Length: 615
Image 1: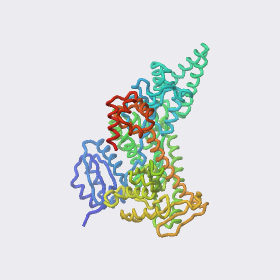
Image 2: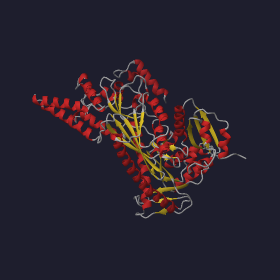
Image 3: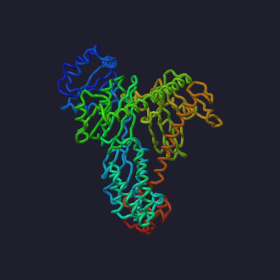
């Protein structure tokens, strides 16, 4: 008979060493229940060898253990890092999980270039130049860049656009660029603007404004009123940026602040970014709490996961004390390649900002709980209206967008108890055979087949665990029948399907709902469940159309000529000016190609051969 629970733990303890390391607890299906770290594996795991003395959450977890695996490490810090890597990869049921792990945007200034470019950057900092941030959101970054353009007149155009421009663009006309592309500003003068922008972003703003004010007064005294007006506009733009910062801590230069607020089993962690004595923004997180963890475990796990792919500042301020803060400090210091201190503020400015962040965390969590209550009520109403056997805690909606099969994109959106789960949205591109048909049913069948193909092997626990209870497809009986066929082929059970189609007059509010083997259902135009279905359907349409437009716009600016080595912007323009289109170029003879200015005999042969080899 197979061992289970406490007996599995006892059986493993006797074989363990006293080294630091990481342990994993698995259930009967091989799914990971929990990943933990230990300074002493034998001592830590033995604490699970009896049920008494644990919280209800841990008791439940121990009862589900079927097997355990172990990895030893040389140090406690290595154990902590390995634990957080495994948690991120495996997403165990009883661990604290950071669910929104996207990177934050920065402002990037390419100071290594002759005329540096100001731009938004997200992801790995692999390029030369300077990075400023992080900012809490892409819109916040865009707003700051817009104000910096007004204040410092730096270019934001791409390098290819910059190098090919013959006259100043609209940004110069509206006083948001100094037009270095066409020589309206000298290199030294432009580099001074870059230096001022860089200094401003690291907090040296008062000196810049004083210098600009003196320069404006001098220009005015010399009757150079146009120059004085430009300087006035720059000073005004700087003032607008400063006023948007709201709170400027005097004694905290660079820090990230983590404020945790709990209501029952729901948690909000408010993260505040402080850089160069300015608050650059904040972001609310709602981590999965591992079936109810205490606040110390929550904050430690969250902070460790938060910095897996980020570099921490030299101060991390937290709202809850940690029993092993020294290990976390060592891990963060290793990531930062310098000393990182963790503070639990008790008084002073740090405590004041923490109180402000905690209040914001409380308000965010209360809003979220209120929205969740409304969402759950709608989900229950949907279950009742459609007579579903299961509560639809996960709804997947499928849609596609194309123009006669061109630039076809399919999408899946996910709806849960907390609303739209945007981190789990997916896009599908179709092969030529499917796209050329321009057939919505074929595209929908392709999407569902790719979504559920791993179910056959029963090996991917993450896919199986994320099965929806309800699938909504855009369309009527034909689409529903095709969806049913796909699920039957993949032996997917306990998943309901409904098709949503507008009535014969195509008016919103007259939608018809189609379910396999049931009568067509129409809802009252004022039914809140109909509004809910329309909102879900419209979100899928929005995502599909946006994805289609993005793909189409990318294709507009691409050309088969881009694939030919040696064909740059100038040669491409010459070829298009001569032949009118890429298709005409592909049909041209070698002799005709050689007549184009800038095209040598070797290049003409390369173009000619490229189009013949690719057909």
